[in-house]
Image (cartoon, rainbow, N blue to C red; front, side):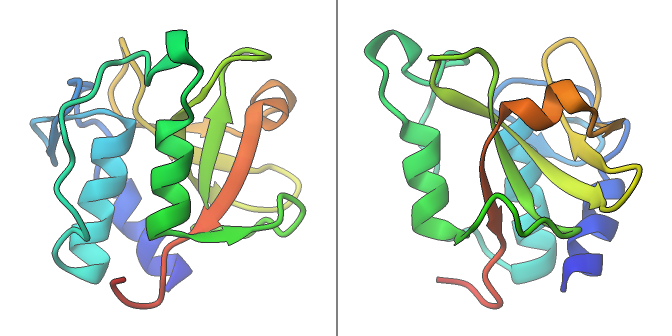
Length: 145
């Protein structure tokens, strides 16, 4: 299934960044990208997504995105990297984790696919600065929860 995840994610490359959207080719944010991949690979989404702000409850230090990921995805040890993994990033030390991506390449030249403000969905090197920001690693369930 990991190759299906990466193939689906690559199909979103070039989709413009649009906060709270999840429509291939029209717009998505990092969560919208994961939602779209879920629909393509697993079928209907497991839950409705309520409106959310770009700060992901950062002022209140509430790990909303992390809790949701733990509920719908399978938690993996950080050290067990594989293609197709969902990566949750903490963009600043001490901040809430609020960015998601899909690991597309594993090994000597790792990469990930993500959508972030000001950019379209893109495949980026999973460079050392990005690797340091990984707060958690998940995989999609084999079937819907």
